[in-house]
Length: 400
Ligand code: NAD
Ligand code: MG
Image (tube, rainbow, N blue to C red; front, side, top):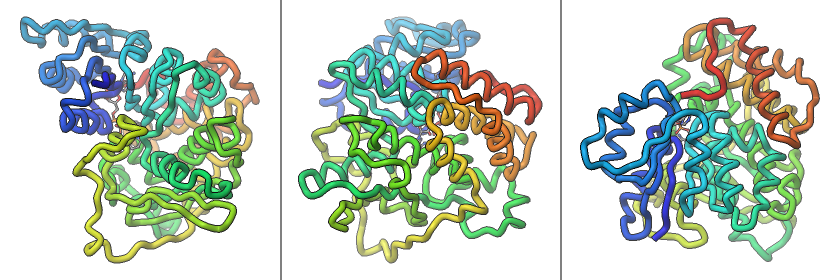
């Protein structure tokens, strides 16, 4: 029996993780849940899985949560900003499905406890790369990606082991809802259009990131941290320039690895997050699941094209932050969170998002990211600067 903790259990990845676990009741037991503020969903989950401990980030809703639980529920309830770290190391596997920089305590806490981290929360790895790399060396600690592209690369690298060296990684992108649009058309897109992803159903932040291609840019930095030279012996020694993005609108090929002999290995499945979630929970085994298999007679064609770098400047902003390294990715990710929140609030237009990130990156102070304090400081400074441009009342980094 593998014990599982789910941080961000009420979100898109979190609820799909509960489905994967429920399909394998003899293999997995959920011992901990954590959520931001959605008490209704959390109460239902507690009643269904009876975890030992639950963390609620939004302390102001603690009383409401306690009152809503039926008599006889023995689950320990923790609340507040430190509660996430408290649940991070309690299970054999922790899935980090929190959205944004707020997921950092889960990433660090789980790895520092020497446990397996199934990582969906890319923002923590991107913002705190060097700090995460050092806790990744904790005896017993293991980082298995859940992001579908990185789960694909993880599988391709396993398949190609012993063949030849890795030459490059190709991360596939659906292109989002605005693929093929002209600059004039992009200037007037609406919130609803940006939220209508053509192939994946996901939470609002990553859906907007997909519409701007910032999600792909963040995934390039994520791949560099997971598999590149920055990952040391855990990686395959390639640099950022060898991590490429290719647009593939059908979202069937989830990413590829090209080896130095010219051979490319790809991973293909239906676009269903339950497959990479199941993979990260079961690794190095594979258990039968009904989620990913393709009916090849109905696939038709698979298309590939280069990304539109002019229309979607967030991609190159992310490459640049990855090249600079240090705290630059933390600034990028924080500025992006502020801009996306402002767009979803109707305070700025979609086309303002890259401009706000670029302006914030111009103020990056070049700090190294070798200590958590530097990462927290960078996140706060970038958020303050981006917040001063968008106005309104941007939330602090502990998004709920
Ligand atoms: P979501 O918005 O649907 O859910 C986010 C979850 O985080 C919710 O449970 C929310 O309560 C919780 N949360 C927010 N702030 C919190 C805090 N301060 N403390 C504790 N919990 C908090 O988001 P999602 O789409 O499930 O994405 C989660 C992460 O997974 C993101 O980093 C995203 O980039 C990544 N990801 C998602 C998908 C997908 O298909 N949804 C695919 C790949 C990667
Ligand atoms: Mg992805």
